[in-house]
Image (tube, rainbow, N blue to C red):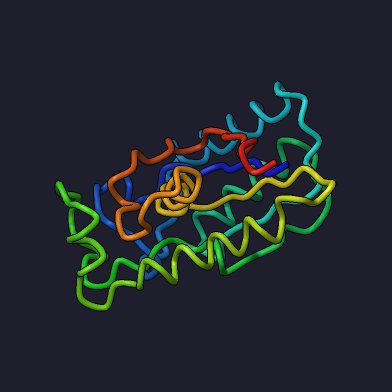
Length: 176
């Protein structure tokens, strides 16, 4: 079984800026609290996490470490680049504004949404049938793409899907 958690609030979230892959935005104090709360939620759900797999960005690695400490996870955290955030190209570092998927994916130097889809799906396919409880710690864009895959939607429209909140544990039970 795979569980998803989005990193805690980052400095870019606080500043209301698109971070993408290129802004290695750190967690805020609130973000660290959200990570701790995510760990408490895992305990309260009675989950025995066998593997924690994180995006390589600092905000996710820090979230994963905080959760690991809270739940008493002693294994190493696995870093998997397939679940790094979507590369927003020229929109990275700009203020949040109302934007459609079509505008996002056509930004200069933005990642190809089909490649993004394929790397996230590859991760899910590799881990979904394991006889382990997996916690993936990643990003809003990855969560949106997971929902796009779940709903069998056009990957180019992933950004039009509502994002998962920071620090909330989401069970991906539809993968079974």
